[in-house]
Structure formats: structure tokens, C-alpha cells
Length: 362
Image (cartoon, rainbow, N blue to C red):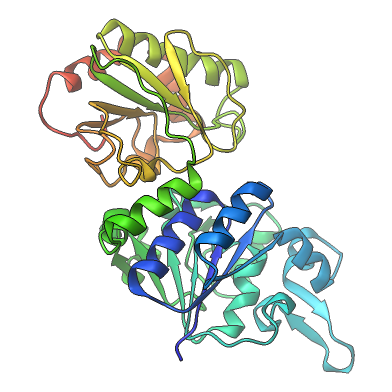
């Protein structure tokens, strides 16, 4: 019997994995890493009740790194190399995760190739497929010393890193494979959230939605067009300060109110909600891609500074989607320039609202 492995480290990944497994009738084991987004006991209980046939394990990447017992010279060696007695040095990609109990998998699906558990799981899988995690799939990351020197020694670009560049990653499934960095574009294959959810029966889609969102969000009267504002922890990834982050989203909310929208904000799961004047708050503890499976009507407009959830232009979330920055401009300098033009540069948003087209980015 074919057996799959799915490694998830946030709610969006978990929803995608469950929808994929159920929609294809696959036999699978999921390892959910709770380092960043731990799950409540209630949610775990609902998952067990609904998907008892799927083996879902819970752990932390940090726990597996500790168990690996890597060479403690640097963080890089601690995550990649360990002394193995008379056998010498063992690398993470040759160390089977103990939590998998020696199982072999025909294919392993991951969402982040930099996780320790992703590297270690590769030795237990005949094939590794990396799936879309977000905007990180589409950009190059700068590399500092001494990691750059080590990358050069193993034949990788010294100062530029791309998710999925590793030799043990066989394929990359994303919504826009043609937009992947050149170094990994040959591995790209198209797969979107609508593709995966389209395989579910209406009953299974509704069940999945109810597990993650047991209480449906309450919307307004509908007397005004509705706008969804998706935030991101820009301060948490050092793109700006916390006051600058909050002021940016307040400017957007103000403009949407001025344009006549009933504004609903959904904070990123890693953010703690904060007040935005003129906007009501939706729960952050579910991926917005579950909006349609919950049987909720699409928003008239969805807006983000730069969010993976709007990359696909999914009309089940909103009739119109606007990204205010391109992924290439989603940097410290790009965001600084964008903020310097507030609120004047939101005039672009007004023009987009008047158009029937769905611009991918402004």
C-alpha cells in the first residue's frame, strides 16, 4: 500500500494537506510542527474525531534538533552535522526521524526545505515534493558569512539562497511555477488551493471548514460592499517597526472606509490582534482559503500589502483582489518607499476598486 508523509508547520499547510489526502483518498501520515503555531487541545480533538484514519503526529522542530544532538560549534553545524561514534560524521539528511518509527514513504510533502525535520525526513521518502508556503517560494534570500562559505564549498550560490534548491527536493508544486526563481524553476509544477479543494465533496469541504472554524464569523448587514484586509507581521520579520506596521494598516483601513466599504480585518496567525479604527476583526486562527468551504459569501474586495493568500486570485475569497506591493518590492527598502507615499499612494487602490479587472499587484 502506498504511504505518504506530510510535514506541516502552520494551519494553512495543515488544511492543504488534509484536503489533499481526503480528496485523493490517500493513506498518509502527518507531522505537524508546533514551534510557531501550536494547536489547541480542542482543535486536536476535532481532528481526531473527523480524521481518525489519518495518523497525525505533533512535535516541534526544536525538539527533533535537540534529539539529533548535532555538533554544537554553531547553529549551522548543530542542525546539520553530528558525531556518530566510529562511523564518523552523520548529516541530517541521513538521520531518520525517530518519531516516524522507521516507516518508509513513497512521497514526502513539505512546505519549507529549511526545517530540520524536512531534511531528516528526506531519508525516509522515495521522493520529496515541496509545496507552496507563501511568498518565500518566489524570492532569493541573502546569505551571510560563514554560511556563504559553506554553501560555496558544496557547490551552491554563496550569497543567494532559494527554497527548494536542495538536491533532495525533487519537485516544487506552486500556484505560479513560472514565477519561481531561475535556480529552481525547472522543478516547478502547478498546483493551487482551488485545485486541491475541487477534489473534495461538498460534505468533506464543509466538514473541514467546521473543524477549523466551529463558530462561523459574523458579518455586517451587507448594506455596504465588504472588504477584507489581510495583515502580516511586518515588524516581526524586521521589515519595519511595530508603530510603522500598525500605521500602515490603519491607512489602508481608513481608505477602504472612505471608499464606502464595510471593512473586516484578518490578522496573520503569528500576530496578536490590535485595534484598527473602522474595521471589525475576524478570527486569525483559520486560513482564509476556508472561507468558501464554510459556505460564506465572497468579499467584494480583498486587500493585502503582499500576501500569498491572494496570489492565486481566488474569487471564492473575493470578487476582486489587490496586492499593494510586488514580491520583488516586499523588502525593507521597498516597504519604506511605499510607506513614505502614504496615504497618497492609496489612490491606486481607489482606481482598482473602480475597475472590473482583478490586478495581481499594483
